[in-house]
Length: 75
Image (cartoon, rainbow, N blue to C red; front, side):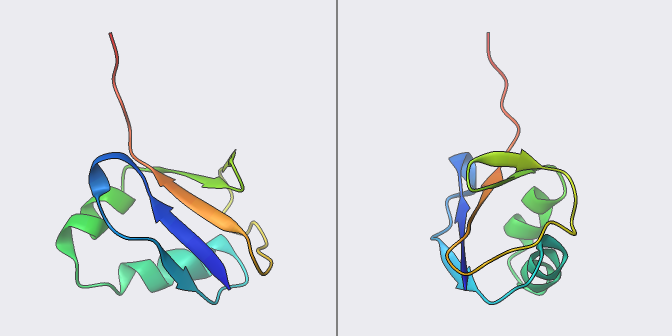
């Protein structure tokens, strides 16, 4: 089981899912009926155990933490 945390303005509680890779996580999160979440998923970066990942085939193991990182701007 992996834990997914939603950072910044997404404001959703962490959830836990069974998944073997990020592609499965994406598929399961896209099934949520929460329109706001689906909107965020299209523009967010993803970190696996505090490291940014770009491949949806990144393997997952029990206890991994996935962070959904919304874009930010600074000045």
